[in-house]
Amino acid sequence: MTTAVSQDWMRSVVEKMAGIAGVSDVVILTGDGLMNAGVTARDDLGAAQAAAAAASGFLSCGKGIAQTLSGQPARVLQGVVETDIGFVVVIPAAENTFLALNTTLAADIGQITYEAKRLIERLGDRVLGSAQRDAGT
Image (cartoon, rainbow, N blue to C red):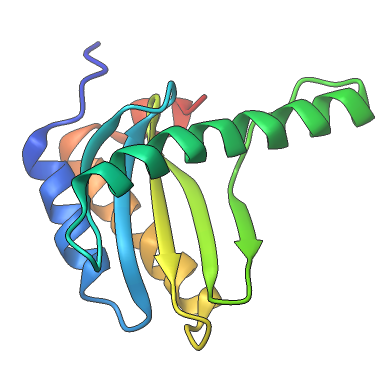
């Protein structure tokens, strides 16, 4: 079983998510915080790379908090942070691959999260197969 995510798959996800109203930045990252693909409103590669590293840390913190408080193994299903300028959403996209989105404050976060998960599922079935996509981290 291969765990690599294809460049075409990543490009499709980034392009489609960037076209959704309210989404300003899209980054696909590995579990260890390396950027695989991304687009930012400011066209800033350094910012996208830094965001990938921060998103990985964010997921690790969420997992650590859940495991520490519950005393049970936990797997992150999504992470959401609301700021005074918008929302940050990080969700698993494939095995050891995550999608990080930055939105405007006026964005419909429920709709954006729904569209992201639906897109990942649709594209993931074609590229990865559902068993591999669902493995996550």
